Amino acid sequence: MIAFVDRLSKKRGTSVGSSAVSKTDRDVVLIDGVRTPFAKAGAELKDIHAADLGTTALTELLARTQIDVNVVDEVIIGNTGSPADAVNISRVVALRSGIPLKTSAYTVHRNCASALESIATGFDKIKSGTLDVVVAGGTESMSKMPILVPQAIQNILNKLFSAKGPGQALPLLGKLLGADLKQVLALLTANQRDPYFPVIAVVQGLTDPFVGINMGMTAENIAKDFGLTREEQDAFALRSHQKAVAATKAGRLRDEITPVFQPPKFKTIIADDVGPRESQSIEMLAKLRPFFDKKYGTITVGNACPITDGAAMTLLMSRAKARELGLTPAARVLGYGFAGLEPERMGLGPVYSTPVALKRAGVSFKDLDLIELNEAFAAQVLGCVKAMGSKKFAQEKLGLGEAVGEVDPEKLNVNGGAIALGHPVGATGTRLVVTLMKELKRRDKALGLATLCIGGGQGGSMIIEREN
Image (tube, rainbow, N blue to C red; front, side, top):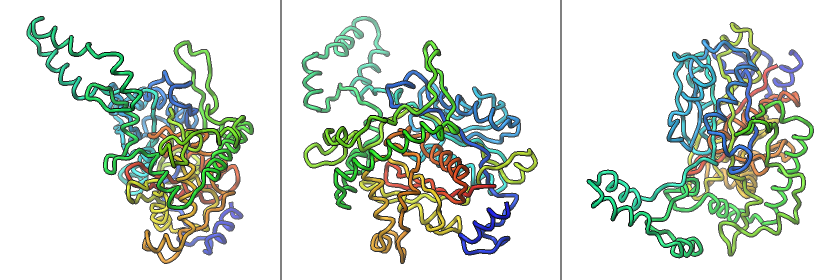
């Protein structure tokens, strides 16, 4: 313990016992974290409801920590899909996991950072003394995001439901069912919008309502701004797969994953992430065509994260409560930050939010031992790396005198990232913190940053410190 504190004090340029390393009863500590495997939407986890994914992760977390569920003050879970049959999905997950009726639960939504928001909210409540024990996490089934009925069809249905007798109902039914198949196929081929044509919720959700472009096009903007080539992006994507495959083979990710039984027969066990591909090659990636800007673009399905299903949960509490319960903290949350920027370059969000988190945590960028930066797109991560290391960017965009900091590639996403693992939007923020917490312990390192971009033009960052 003395050696660890001594290393940490030297890293920060402080003495043992100074405010930079001192511990207080109101410190917010992470006891443990766990997640389900992640799988591409429409694949192995497609038949599992988001509430069931969340329940699987939370049940395992409670079992691993052996905590008395009666001491949990609140459950906060991130989710973006808001299933119609579980609108406040946090309450559903909590009760299904054995959390008592008396314990409050609510759902938070900050797009890609919903599950980081859940931890940040829990942090604030514990730090202020309002609560002592919080379950914070996120869950998402992007497979089950609906196909929406357009307003034109809703209008017909509304009239149909209020129709008085067959005389009024039959013409409406005829209008509802009279779509010409050839017309529908023509619309599909031409990629046109029709007032009677269904809306795919996940596509609409990934389109920014302020600037009207898909998230992929925001990545194209960053690629152009920073002169990022297709080759650079593909090489980064390949490395993500290679690191994730290596981490899976070595069993490093098993520590954070609880297996899931695949419905409907529940005979097949999904124990590892489905996304990482050992067979991935630069030649295979190079064959893929640009997906968003088909003529001039560089973003493909190979150098972008897949749409994904999964859940992740953490147990937070005050240091005093952990001591009272005889629990050993795994890490301490030092601080977090959120910041906004132009929506059309939302991928640079971590560059804006990280200085905020660092200042609140009382540490500098060079102190960081590991960084988990969500890989929405290879271009987005590479853009963040360049922007963080740029003094000019810091001065012109952030109002800072110096660059945020140079990112050491050996510290970045050491077990791969979302390009390989996947990005279940409402759960990823917690996954980043869980992965970071466990890797800090594995490597005997002190400080880590979990950060991600947020659709709509925001960034979220959190600094954690390993406990010995």
